[in-house]
Amino acid sequence: MAFSKQHRPHTLHGLLFVSLFAMTATFISEFDFFKHLGISPLIIGIILGILYANTLRKHLPSEWSAGIVFCTKTLLRVAIVFYGFRITFQNIAQVGISGIFTSITVVISTFFIGYFVGTRILKLDTDTTILTTIGSSICGAAAILATEPVLKSEPHKSAVAVVTVVVFGTFAMFLYPFLYKMGYINLNATGMGVYIGGTIHEVAHVVAAGNTLGNEVSNNAVIVKMLRVMMIAPFLILLGLWLLVKNKKITRKTQVSIPYFAVAFIGVAGFNSLELLSSSLLSSINALDTFALTMAMSALGMETSFAKFKKVGMKPIYLATLLFIWLVFGGFYITQFAMTL
Image (cartoon, rainbow, N blue to C red; front, side, top):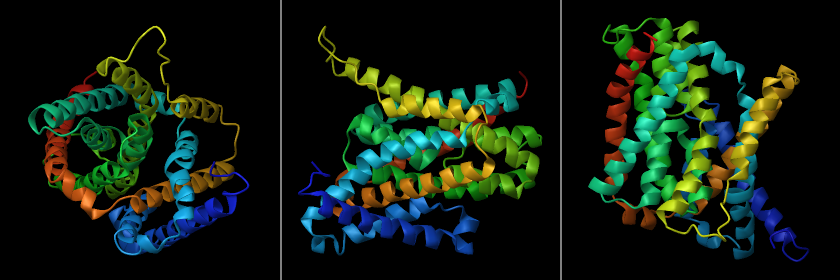
């Protein structure tokens, strides 16, 4: 056991070591350059972790590895649960049927397109396909982190998926405002907010793109994005059931493995909807949660070597490119139709 009397000191050393990476990532993310690009500490954390894994990791005491694994498993689940404090059910009412329709349609269509193309056409393995697809369809790195324990996939596959989120989310963050200002996107401010929130990858990317176009666009974009975030929980539950059926492992004795952290995520969002906590306390909780997620991402990077990247190849990039094109064009027409509802 990681926290048994014998192993506890080593595990704590590993946790402290990962936290130093998370603190560094948080500090770097405050630079104006990274703020302008909308690069969150989560992304910086995994990059630092990957750099370390491919240079100095061999010098890490093997006993400390338990602390790193704890961050990629247990701490990750706890952080996803507390992510629910960023959401309230009132958000759903604020964006109305157009925001709800766009969020659900984009998530479902993107996932099925990605899964079909990834597994049938590109012949990618199921785990890499799902992680890459979910990063595009729901909410970037956070969704990838939440999905990994359900799939029980290898860390490097999550890292590859996160790379696609960074590349295409950052590109979209600049592309959308440019196209809107040039008059190529025929949507009003509300519609543009729904479009941004419904199709851009990371929450930070959505905030950055929305702020460029004013408060009305920004507010609607963030709310619709958080609706997509809320879909993590039902998605993970359905994914767990689907994997059982797909693998033909259901028998009378089968115990359905429900990701309880996903259920807890919904519970926390429901509690947050009661608005019992002060804004300052919520701000503190969210800051701590972001730090925990950054620790999880840093630890994930520490478990990833470039040799593992080579095994995957360019196919995840091809898949992410196709999904990005779908989000830009398909997402636009979905939003345009939703605004007529």
